[in-house]
Length: 168
Image (cartoon, rainbow, N blue to C red; front, side, top):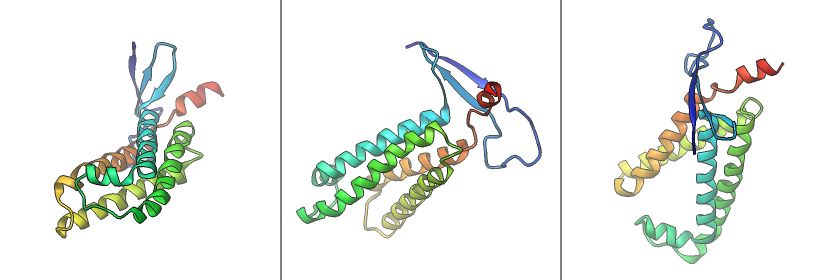
């Protein structure tokens, strides 16, 4: 695939911009067919696919996934709460696609995903530093929680405002 990458400057350098945001800078990726996506949207789609994959794994193969991670074996009855967890993964996976299409209207759900990742990271840190889970087992999920949380937080205001203004 051929891609063109453009860096767009902010529309204004006004006082009152969210100091934690990426101040309006965004990177657009143009594909062969002219489809334009900013990095925030790509991030949402990547996270959504990951959430759907985790949901499917926890729904259909929780014991195998737990064993693959090197964690303690679980009883067959634990598949029931994992199936409930899978539903949440799947719903939020689809939700990330919805967020990508209109981040402004779905800001609550965006902040929800950031909060979920903060809980994931806090749980990983607690269980790792208390010696219950080895860093070999918790490191990768904690890394994922961190980049998802930080990426969504930093890019949450880097939407396609320029395109909305041009179409008006």
